[in-house]
Image (tube, rainbow, N blue to C red):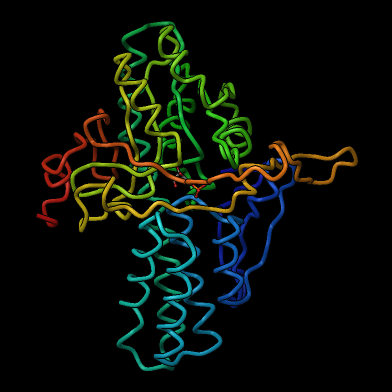
Amino acid sequence: MKVNGVHYRSIWPDGDDETVSIIDQTKLPHRFEIARLETLDDAARAIETMQVRGAPLIGATAAYGICLALGEDASDDALEAAAERLRATRPTAINLNWAIDEMLAAVRNRPRGERLQAARVRAHEICDEDVETNRRIGEHGLTLIRDAAAAKPGETVNILTHCNAGWIATVDWGTALAPIYMAHDAGLPVHVWVDETRPRNQGAALTAWELGGHGVPHTIVADNAGGHLMQHGLVDLCITGTDRTTAAGDVANKIGTYLKALAAKDNGVPFHVALPSSTIDWTIEDGVAGIPIEEREAREVTHVQGLGPDGEIVSVEIAAPGSPAANYAFDVTPARLVTGLITERGLCPASGEGLRALFPEKG
Ligand SMILES: CSC[C@@H](O)[C@@H](O)C(=O)COP(=O)(O)O
């Protein structure tokens, strides 16, 4: 996507392939800053601190983290230690493990001298594949928006989204936002309700920044506004991303997604979830029982980040000092509340049968 007229991906290798550049998402929307990853530890910390975030981008960053590790030490022990270091960064998004496993498969059985080059090739491929996958998700999801537009000719289609599943959560395009970008580019009248997405405000800070940059009409709302909007017919459909989808179609996504799905069900609003197949955990059926939910530091709940009087980024305490806070980063929406899944292979019901019909090789 473009920023100030320049096309960016969210991550890219630098000219000599020795280092990797990322857009530092902890600075957005206030500053557009590029950070350089030079070591395995840089990559791991970028994921932990959420300089990079969003399930597919976490995976892509881990893939480059393996490259950076191999540049330091291409031994078996170092490779396995790098994989473990990266796996430990964030627990919920399965794309992380998927990408690390892809990298290990690409390099493990090669002589040491060939590993780094093979890793770079696979990491680049993972990024290119992510872009193409998301483009396809966009095309399939666009059909849903076209249908919604056809059902109310001449009127705006209102879409609610939660968190950020846009181009900076992936390598490019995004998952939930890809169909929205395509609908807007195709001239369909779309407007997006952007959940602010406490506690880190990925909606208010990142999704709104993305949509604004692309010229897509949108409005930021407090997380708790969704039910009210739906009761008053102001939402035609919901589209969110997911960090891990089970073989039965349960979806883990940013905390608060489940409540939106409940409200959507109660109000007859279609609730769709967009995902690349690398987000499917075929080993788990029951997401509530089986998906590990990340718990992050309390400070993310008790403090908010914003701009200070001199334009500096500051963190401000908003909670009663000393009160404990809990910070569950994700929740699980059971498949029964999900109208359908949008994948790179097409649309399907959120169910084991639906997913297996699209991915018969997982049988
Ligand atoms: C395309 S990304 C889907 C999800 O990764 C996204 O909705 C989300 O919940 C991101 O959470 P985050 O904690 O910001 O990494």
